[in-house]
Image (cartoon, rainbow, N blue to C red; front, side):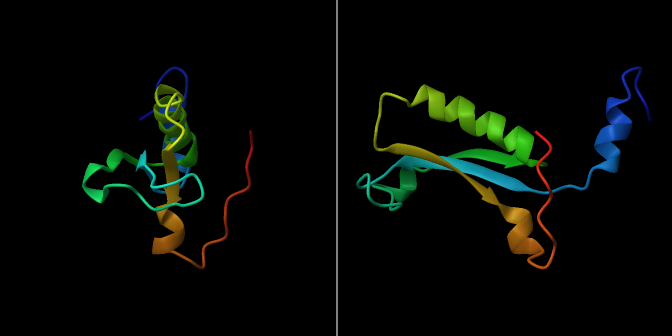
Amino acid sequence: MTTSTGKKTEEAERPQRLHLVFGGELKSLDSHEFRDVSKIDIVGLFPDYASAERAWRAKAQKTVDSAETRYFIVHLHRLIEPDLAPPTRTA
C-alpha cells in the first residue's frame, strides 16, 4: 500500500537489516566489559541502521555526563547472514 508520500512503498522495497542497540556502565574506559551485566539497557531491535543510529544517539546523549556509560549498535543481520555484502551508505 502506498501513502501520498510514497513512504510505505519505499520501506517495502528496502531489505530488512536487523540491528540491536544496547548499553550500560563499563568497568573502565579501556574495556568493553560491563560493570553489571544484569543492568545492561536493551534499547531495542531496529529494522535498519538509520533507525538504530537515531535510538543510539538519543541514549548516548542522555548519558553524556557519565564517561563510563556506553551504547553500542550490533549489526545482527551480519551475524544472521555473514555472506551478505554490507550495504553502501547513502548519507
